[in-house]
Length: 282
Image (cartoon, rainbow, N blue to C red; front, side):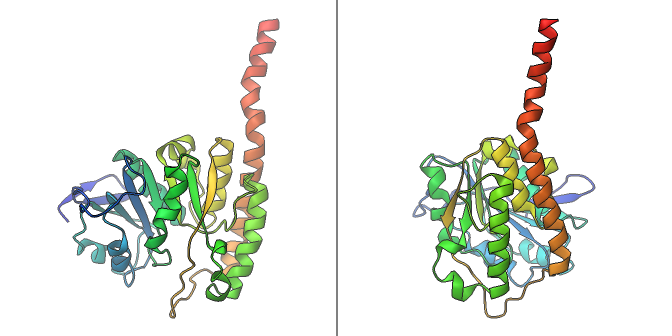
């Protein structure tokens, strides 16, 4: 990779200049610049295939290595994809923080639509056009994948994951305010520049539970959110690194916090106007 820039104590950036997409590639969102953010933690065995799988019509691929203990960053440095950018966190900050770092880099590059694809290869790039379709049609500001729209999910997704995702999705319908969306824990998402600028990225929950928090923030900002069908991908050697006791309490707190924060927003917005009216009547 051609250049290195120091952004401060938390992260380093290495980058190559973007190159035009191949002539045969068709951008499903014509006229908009696209980037894929890939958060990665100890994904040395999968990261190269993930980066190579991103279609040529995607202008930028931003890999955020969240202080991996393996060779994730070294593997990325060997890749020659045009427009590839590597951000390395010196300290582990969580998947939500890694995604936010990628969002900030994409916004700084003038990107119009940012997709998130995990570094473990569980998101099929063939689903990208379906994920981008609601944005292309002008009907959504943020689109999230819904694996439960794929009939194969019941035989592909591990039973414990099915149960957990169903439970959290039902809870997130209430806390986020988006009753029409499902599969809240699916991290395969596409966000417009406007959606990312409408929420306070500094306050987004940094770890597991990030997607539940983001949905509540998007609702409070009046953003249009929709689901898109995506496939559930679980390879034969797949195993979850998530420990249930380690996520139950944080997610419960995130759900409660995001719900309280969302319902409080209309009241907080009304206070300055009320104070102004009372001052004018004195």
